[in-house]
Image (cartoon, rainbow, N blue to C red; front, side, top):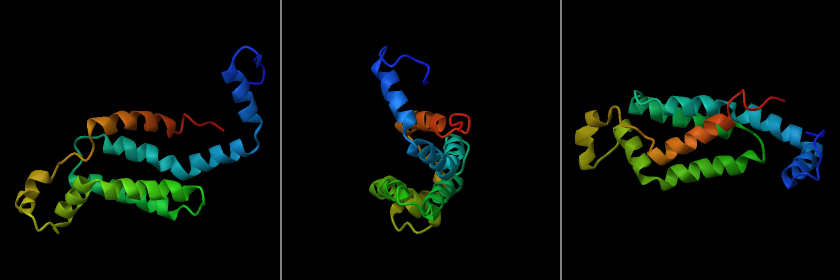
Length: 141
């Protein structure tokens, strides 16, 4: 990157400046170490043959992994993850159905939800982007 002429493009100039920052390598290593499991989790969630129980277990595992990371920078990631799950009322309903705690009329249809997909089309598009970002091959330090 340093061999390119910084006057050719602003992107080259900004990249060269960024690569001179000593904290960049540390930050990239932190991302790789702390969020490596997200790539595998995203791949698993894209599998349409997962049962509802398996899908929810993957999400719970991600939450547990995020909670276990003792890093100040991770707090915002962990809080955002929990916030998204709490705001998604349908996700909490699916979780209640899976746990058998649903008192609504949906509890009659528990068997119908056995292979319910917990991802939407929009989420699958995002998955493709994030799966590439968190791929072990994408970050080579």
